[in-house]
Length: 405
Image (cartoon, rainbow, N blue to C red; front, side):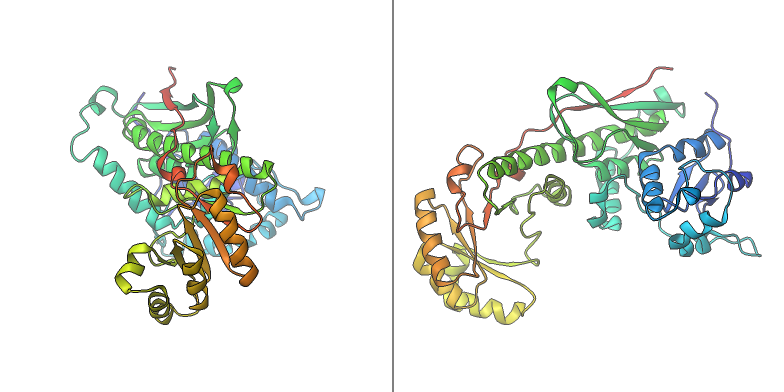
């Protein structure tokens, strides 16, 4: 296939009210509904139409239609710039102003951060994700990609296949990888969907772009999906087990994450509906046994950190006995972790502490697995945390296959 030569045409704006020129240049168009740039360099008008059929674009159109009468409703592929369309896109007016052509023909540029296909992704810092993706791709290809000579700039399509049961998770990272290498991704399922064994193998996304670009992003993107999906699948299994017991507490991960991959692993917990626990040392104070031992006693440790952390940061203390827990709460701790207690010891201590301090949050941790989880669920336990969620999960099997034309 020859090198793509299509460029942006002004008539796109007459046919699709949401299309505008892109600040990235004539090989791109900008969608005012998705607030995203996309390539038109391969198929021109066909690329614009394909964008109109993307899951995320259709979803946003549906949301914009919620409060509209039947006469004013729009479709993802709506033609013409109607007055109702102008009203519907009023929320994007700043974007329209940024991208419109001024009399001198200059365009205002801005960072091309990733745009995702998942609601969960709203919590992700886009600049951080972009930075991570760049580092992961550089790690995988620090110099020459020799195999790229075999495929070159040939335009290809590829399918993402899920091959083992699990929760689809990691979509924003997968999207960001391929956006970084200049490809587009269309999702056929929603993030968080559970794929059972009877549906396998199942195509869940389509990728379009130059063959060398698809292949350079393949392994990094699959690694993210496999691990995020593994975490989400295990976390959801934990949650489903506790719900069957009618326990109303929270299942949480821990800080025992993979260096450099914490954002993705914590995100996967969110997709499953689990609690991330503290993200890092700055997001909550946790005084563990080594802190207490070094400080001398519980009271001294709590009082010193409370002074520094102020009113906006909670303090949790890891306790080895009920007596330590009482001392910690009396010193100002809001959360007590009973660490490495047997389930019987836990429930006795938790009941006694709640009777004295009804508002204290009690966390159970240490040696808790899916097999013994049920025994730790109790009326006085608010949080159960397990490092298994970010350390002991099985990955979900994915593969990416180029579609032969």
